[in-house]
Length: 63
Image 1 (cartoon, rainbow, N blue to C red):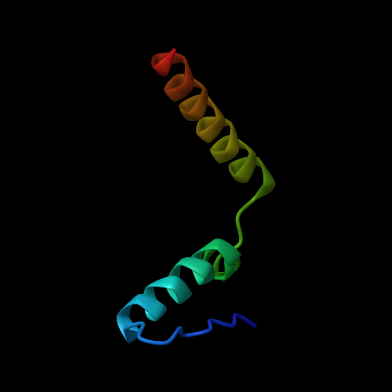
Image 2 (cartoon, rainbow, N blue to C red; image 1 turned 90 degrees about the vertical axis):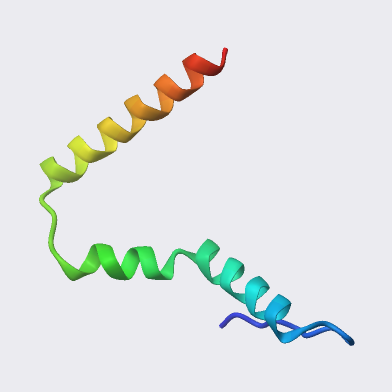
């Protein structure tokens, strides 16, 4: 369970923004979406490899 302490004088919008950021970090929504439809291991592996290649290309362009 995510707990957000609202500080004195803090607007509700800021507290809500902190909650959303914490919730995003937990990855609950991402996992829920991934569980909605079954993905074969070969497809998951292929997607993971494509992502790794993309990240590697991004890192090599920065250097």
